[in-house]
Length: 431
Image 1 (tube, rainbow, N blue to C red):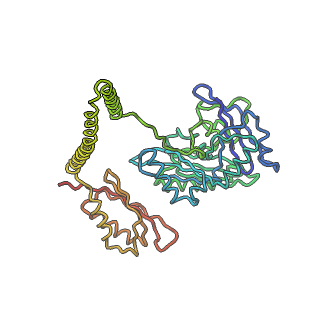
Image 2 (spheres, rainbow, N blue to C red):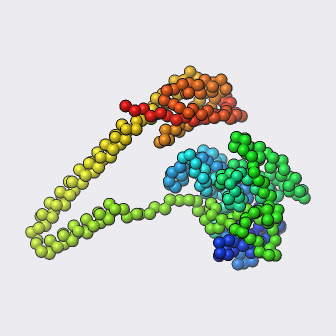
Image 3 (cartoon, helix red, strand yellow):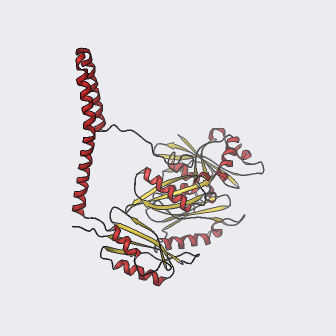
């Protein structure tokens, strides 16, 4: 099976074509075409017609990328939470972008979600030009996901550098999560490694700050094919050219169809009807009743009144059955409440509203409660003393344990100078 990835930057058109060979893949064709004044159509005309369809790869510099940590849940719940986070954190409205996301590793009841979006005014003209040039776009993704796929098997934090035209992309990935992702310009005619060294150092420092001192175990700059270290999962056919600008497209080919988020078709919940035991019982009951009905119609006409009475009785019994089921459910809930106790959510909210710290000094933004009893409180604070007082009063509450205050994060604007978050566990109250 042939898989094609086409990456278009402001200066170059990069094409990578792979072919599945058993359990591995082989790169069978590559192109790195410098865009001329003739426009994109002129560059596309140099691509063999058999390769003019596949996945369009958008460079990191043209896209918006965010990673969210959200509670675990069903796909439908995750989609709703991602939409909510995008409305808060993205600078453009939902109808102004094409977006999709990838679900990362789940840990401690949280799941990491990498969200990518490209503005319509960037993507739509590009799709129109590709259509005019005879290239059929099956999917659209962002180069970062291709680079991430190249290092997805690395157990420790790893940095990989890609290139899109005159921009380098720097990605630090840790167990499938985007810890750091940024771009750096490459001056024309300059040495790539020297021009991005400062950004590499900054990225490492940023990662260390976010990961509480963890270091980047490996830095991959795949100027040569062997530097990717794909260990046979993908090979380069003899005589095929290679350069750094092809790395992200190779990662997309390695992931294959459906392996990276598709901005044209974001994740959706497919509503499927599953025939449950109750449905089968209901169907059997209907069939039996219908058979009896038609049989009695043929045999004894005077049973019509009796059948009508039976239907009325069934209709009268149905509300009673529903009521009994609801009562049974409430009884089970009551037993669980009595046995396991309850969480003092209300007492906590009341206590937080009655701390000695005034609203002028500390402002609560949110309180997130989970079924396990854990709670996360976030807010803004004017100074460290107010934060320390608030934290001590939380620690003194009798129904809280494992109070873990997070660091103060400078805001850089407004009267509240810092953001903060505090995590704790509520103790159940039993009777």
